[in-house]
Image (cartoon, rainbow, N blue to C red):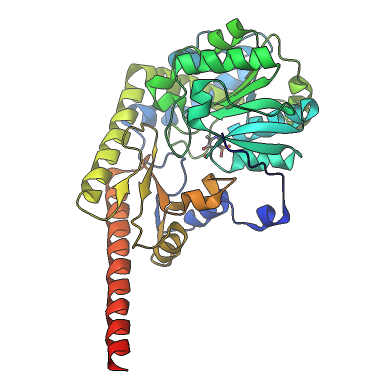
Length: 400
Ligand SMILES: Cc1ncc(COP(=O)(O)O)c(C=O)c1O
């Protein structure tokens, strides 16, 4: 475990966050920036979109609670989460997972001033935690997997993103058992962001059963927003345990009454479709895009960082004699290609991500291939230009 501890600083607030770069990518050009799905709808998803007027009429007529429970059960049971607290009042639906995250951050800040957070991870998680006044302690994935992170007493909660963005790392079932037992034993809350789990069957063991059996206080954030190209029509789900003594219901009701029942009905349909064939199609697309990326990188100076990852983003590692991630990002943006530099994922030590960029894979195969070719060409060009400059300098110094 690393001992560095970071609270909010003015420099943090001034630094550019990942979402602001993702926003630029929405303006045009080739967008392999954000993790939101932007490929074409499948035929059966298209049928569901075409049925939206009928779903609207259905949503008007039916009781909200019933529609909500149906959507939560269809989605969560479809990804192995049979122990999810559907129908207990401890599972609420939010406009997005970030809304669920902010409610969680506010509630955790009632309990503790210090949180141990996986490092690296998507930067809006540390940003939202810091925004609620929490001081963060970075913890590597391997320490969480071992289940015995070395934490100072003042740390009152452990926050894990699994599968993790951008690494694709997954906390194993045994790892969760160990970590939950550790949190129960040491009186810490265990909070989890599982927003990418529907893309990786290795993360689909029944998390809720393990958490409840451990006796620890826990919070889980789920998300439908990384799966289907539904133009940001999505929901985040926030669940917590019987033992969890945090003001989540109160803070949820400060933010919203309910998400749209129309979106929940659409989620039910998409989750049912996903269980039939949609998840297989999605993982097939992600796999073939990762393979295409690996094929283009093969023999180039750029490497696939996490070949074992299954989620819809891929990190690539830049060579020491190539541009760093920030320089490559700027070069690519000038030419209309949007990736993400990985520095900000390393929220406690940006320099750890200096040599990596992230590409989104929930895209058409053509977009991923074009982006990968553009990246490799830009890196080669940079290396060539640097070699040329070196030759010129050497010749000049010889002539003097
Ligand atoms: C792991 C993780 N959790 C939560 C979010 C936030 O999702 P949203 O923007 O839909 O709120 C993201 C965004 O990419 C993410 O990567």
